Image (cartoon, rainbow, N blue to C red; front, side, top):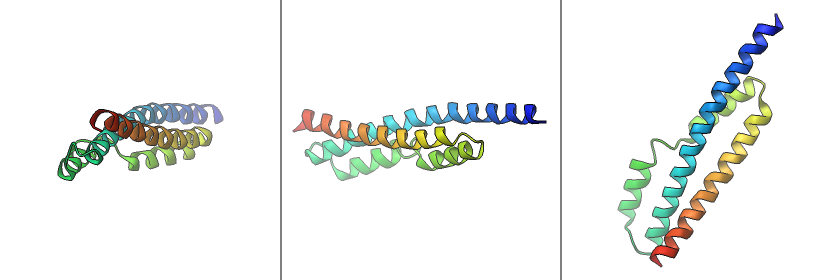
Length: 111
């Protein structure tokens, strides 16, 4: 019965896709905050203790790349390999971009 199986796979991919979207937003915001804090410390406006506290305490829990790997595996198993690859590339690109933007903003503010 390919119909029910195909429908289930599609619904599963949609659920994982929606979760991936929420996870990506959290990771990008967390990367931006980490970039801001790192830039502030580099500019002398903060200490490494504050950086560790905010980075680990505030950003550590909601930003998780283990969830990215799990969701990528699920998408790949559900046959959505193109979306899985796009999600990984997009998440890493957006996260790095947000971190560099945060560091640049901190340098502009505190330098």
